[in-house]
Image 1: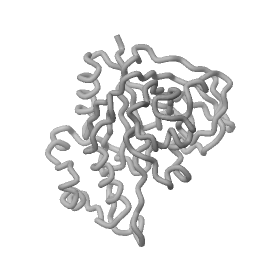
Image 2 (image 1 turned 135 degrees about the horizontal axis):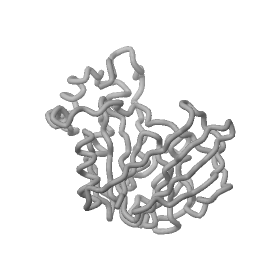
Image 3 (image 1 turned 60 degrees about the vertical axis):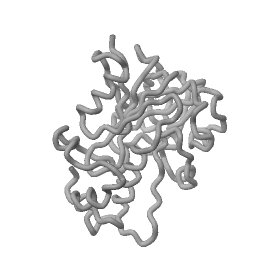
Image 4 (image 1 turned 90 degrees about the vertical axis):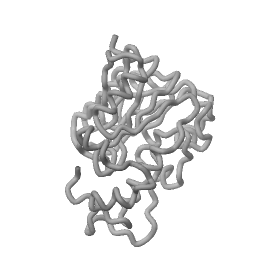
Length: 258
């Protein structure tokens, strides 16, 4: 748990705090600030652009405000995790109710309670054990492999990267993606999506930073919100061309290993 998370002296809140919705929840519309200011918008691209020699501007970074440590399952399961209990949760972690951190935590709770997009199964994991359980039960096997984006240099800026090589992940016809969420401890929004493909993309930044990025491509976007950030950034429609995104470093993709 982050020491002093959200205590007074953190980010002041003079006006209402606007929290962007996670770009990895496909039944949500993008907010205006997300389209213009959110670096995660640059993580989306079309599958046809996945090839060696392709250049794109990306900012690989960890999720701002994400919890740094998992709690043991017994501890996590004993703590309330619902919007209804938000005041009690904030008090337990000494988070000032009117702070930016409180707004982010409430948004995470709302996103965890939201219904799944069509053809999707979702769950929020509040411990490592619950993440593994969701991945193995969703994929129907205990033989699973986890993959994450690895960035060669900490704190790399947004810059132009060139794809040096693209490999499709084995056993990736079905996958579970787990996205780090802003919270007082580690919480991951995990979902099993149909018609998805995972790739490992070797990239080199203009400043020489090497990245082994995990990319996920969605062949069926018909059930997504038509105003989702990916459609607005890429100028495509639901059910159209396959939409891909790189995973930030602190997100995980699970596939069958056998």
